Length: 418
Image (tube, rainbow, N blue to C red):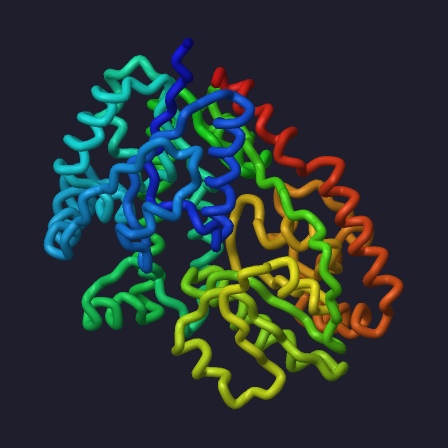
């Protein structure tokens, strides 16, 4: 019997349950590599905040083996920041928080044992492990997802008072409070942007192939490096209509996302404080997704705001509402929540950032407004015109069926030589 091809994924997190856009994307990439291209999946994975070694048992059967990365101590991270980022190699800060010699040795040992045909490295923050895999004959793939340098430029321009620049990175409270002062947040982001610009180009040249989710950013990166090694493997949808009766709440609007991520928390802040005060129609805002207690407490006196938390059935939780509202504070690449909501036949109002990389027509598939007052007016309009809202949802679903099915998206892996 012929041995199946093997691909080793070096990842920043376990991807099941797929309770974030990034995990959902990783899960479907692996599904395509396994089902369409016949790869056995092996994984070397760090754990993100909230994950434990017990979560290994929850991973899908298509993953043949998972080896957990060695956790870096706080002392190691702090030393790395000085040795690898501020001085020495001058890596981006995020790279310094993930690198260690112990993990380098474990990855090398795993490669020698399983002899993969391809090695996939998730995100620029793990790219310094290239030195560990460079000698193998396997195809070496870097999944950048987005050009983080562009994302951070936007974050500086739209940084909100209550967001935290360290996000899921756990730091001592006194350090966390210091770096989250607006002045220091902007200083750190400016520093990180300079490093990212240099290393996005460097690692795009070193790896055999690079993946981004946006066709626009794929073109930009290929122009920067002067090659065609960057490929767009965009976001798709496999959401199916559930055979359940769903009663919609009157004038309920929904915002969804993991509020532990700065981009979602800052976008929610804009929605609640800058857009909703301009809405004339009585509404209920339903917030779906994991959320820190401090954000909930900030709005616990508001009767028009409901925090629903993580939804076991995202389809049901979203469809109980009349309208999706996503005023993105910043970001780059494809927005998972936009694709998912379109696939659920939901009418959506977003801004220009929300539709980047998605082939939509404003007012036909989705409503796009960058001005806060106009955004609020469109909420009023769709809450009071059910026929227009239904037409938008129907057009959005039709576009997903035509252009954003996973089987079609997976074909790009073949173009990459996989």
